[in-house]
Length: 95
Image (cartoon, rainbow, N blue to C red):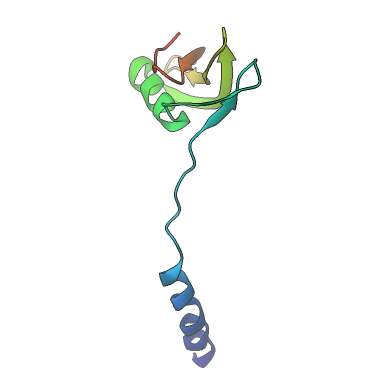
């Protein structure tokens, strides 16, 4: 029991002073080699697709379509059908 108290005494001050985790902006490299910052996060894109089509998101990854950076989202419908959609990272438009 003394060991646990000692361990907590050593760890708690470190945890209390640690800076909160801040997610970094999603950045994608465009075809021209420039780095573009997406306005829509992958999580936002997944939520939007799930709300639009229902079902369950089974895969999400960064993707580029016609020079626009965004996300390729794969959804499994309640009927067992798989649908792959693209969400534009700047506008949130679903294609």
